Length: 323
Image (tube, rainbow, N blue to C red; front, side, top):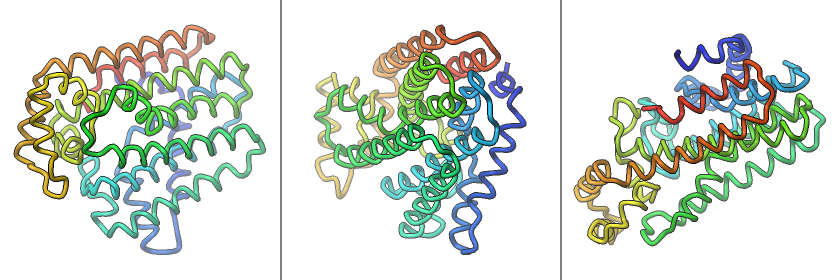
C-alpha cells in the first residue's frame, strides 16, 4: 500500500490545508509573495499537517481549529528551511533552487521571518494558552538547535549525546508538537495526548537519523541535492560519529577539516564514499529502528481507529524510506 492510501480518509482535509497555505503565503509585496510561493511549491511531504490531522482524530474533532494548527505547523517548518538554507549556503532543496539562490540571503531571511509571523497569526483565533506556550517553547528549542549546529560545525570531537540533543531540537520536537497540538486542540485525554507526543518525538528522531543516513547512501536524484552535502558543510551526523570510531578515518577527517575556510572537497568526497560502505550505516539504522520501536509502543495505548492504523503505517514508511 502506498503511503498516501494509509490516510486517504483525511485527503480532503489535507487539500484544504494546502489551500490555506497558498492563501497565507500571499503578500501584496511582489518579492515576498514570489519567494514564499516558490518555497511552498517546492513541495514536501507535509508530515507536520498530517500528524496534526491524524492526532486530532482521537478527540472532539473541530476542523476549523485543526486546520489552523496544521497550517501553522507547516509554515513554521517552511520558515526553518529557508533559514537553514542560508546557514548552510544551500542552492538546491528537493531538486529546486532555494530562496537564497533565487534572490539573496537577506531576502531569504526576511521571507522566513514573514512566514513565521504568518504562522503565529494563524493561531491567534484559538484561545488555548497551553497550545500557544508549547508552540513558543518549540520554536525556542528549534532556534537553539540551529545555533548548536552552527557551533558544532567541523568539530570532530563530539559525542552521541550532543548529536541526539541537536536532532531533538532541530527535528523531533516540531513533529512531537504537531502530534501534541492536534491532541490539545481537540481536547483528548491526558493519556492520549502524552502517547501522541511520545510517538511524534520517537518518529522525529528516527526520521532525522534516516535523513542523515540517506545523505551518504542516497543519490542526487533521490535527495534533490548532492549526496554528502552535510559532511562537506561540516555537520557531524550519526554515521560520521560511528565511522570515526575507526581512528584512521577520524584522522582523515581531521586533516580535511584543518582549514575550514578551504575544505579539501576531494578528501571529503572520498570519506563520504568510505562511510557509505562502512558498518556505520548499519549501526545508524539500528538506532533509528530502536526509536521506531518506541514509537509503535507509544501507539499501543491509543484506542483503535483509522488514525492509529495510519500512524503505524507512517512509522513503517519512515523506517524504510529512500528519499
